Length: 68
Image (cartoon, rainbow, N blue to C red; front, side, top):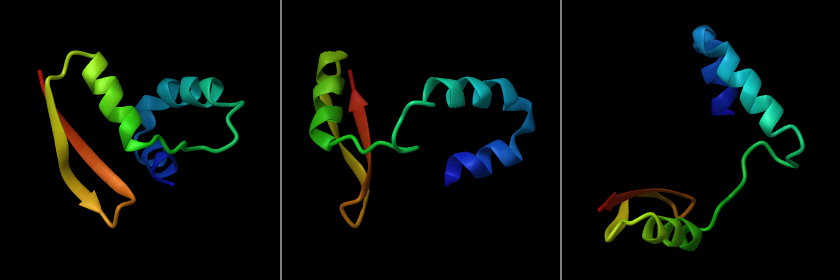
């Protein structure tokens, strides 16, 4: 998982990783999947007027960009 690689490579962020582990200790999975509709809703609620997918990999991963 990329979090493990990041923690291994970025020793100076140790406190951040400890906090993250404590915060998500009760989670069933280390990474949750959030539907794109939820991201769009949250962007809209946060004041973004325009947003779109600017990168997509086989319908699994996406990057959204928003403009306020």
